[in-house]
Length: 440
Ligand code: UGA
Image (cartoon, rainbow, N blue to C red; front, side, top):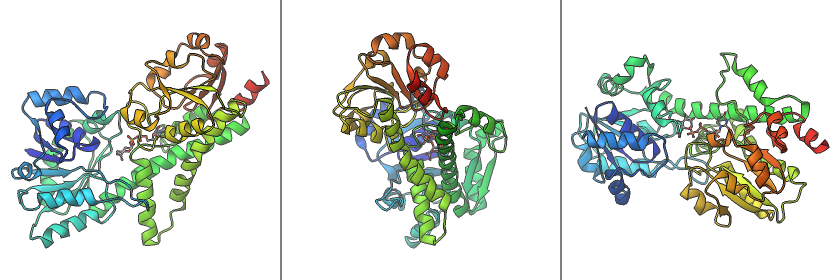
């Protein structure tokens, strides 16, 4: 089977590499020539654990190649995946120009027996509109929608061992071609669900919106915990043990960010508005997540006696979550921005050494490791839940800081452990802990 993947962003590159690992011949295409020549040498433009090794392995095996020539790449393909970006426009709706540009470029060269598969996240109705757009040009193709459910940082595992594969298809032939492409997942009995185009499109948005709502819900429960003496980690554990609820996406924190939840919740809201369908839970999720960042700033401010002027703040982690260098819509952008605005002197250590982050925060000092970052700090603030922050040597840290205050926006430590090391601990959703610390 020959597979072409248009777009070497996150989804396209991971999908292309993983399909080649399944043993298929894969060509990945991007109109960014510099990116393509880097990829040909095995240099990947993003941070995803394990992806570099898999990419090199499959290039060397002759199953994976890269080109900027989308027309040529599509001539012999059995499947062409479109995995280009669909960024948010100012009104929250999805910008489909890259998708249509890619479709347009392929139209006259694509093998007429191929299935054209949209993997980019697109509003309901888009796949059918693309099918009709091609028909208008005299190109009759099987057009399929196949949403991706990859999480950054765990994308290879998510691709190789997904919970499910959703395929919006309209013909038996397309079903057959796609079944063949996902046939390697048969070993793990992964459910493959065939639906209409519209159902598959909505499944993607509904899944992300639901997860965003789950995160937002636990963040609101955390607020309640802080006022009533309960512990949000234990509440989440108690809730999650109920199989109907499940234990994932119940970690309270600084609010969701990234390239997907904020964009997809806004696009779904925009779509529902256009149809005149009320979705108050979704509206409130978006609003509540926006407020969350301000609340985190207040938390830091209160812990620092409401004055940040001239204070040294050591920030640990700025990417939107661990195991990525992605800064898109990271809560840290607003939080650190506000700390600077209020006169704090900010030092940052992030294990990804994200270039995006360095471009965003230009007037901060960057450190090479967490400990150096904490030298002379008046407060240490953990924003991202990187593994290496889970077991910091707090005694060592205590010797380096000027004032032993740890504000942990991911609640990564038992309260007693941090306090035993001499720190005042201010975390998320652990009742009365702040009041006790202030009393001490
Ligand atoms: C998300 C979905 O999880 C994927 O299934 C989907 O394929 C992807 O979007 C996409 O549409 O492309 P991702 O954006 O990589 O994946 O990140 P998540 O792991 O879902 O985290 C999103 C945000 O929620 C992060 O800011 C994270 O810190 C936050 N989060 C997540 C919490 O605050 N608490 C949790 O318990 C889980």
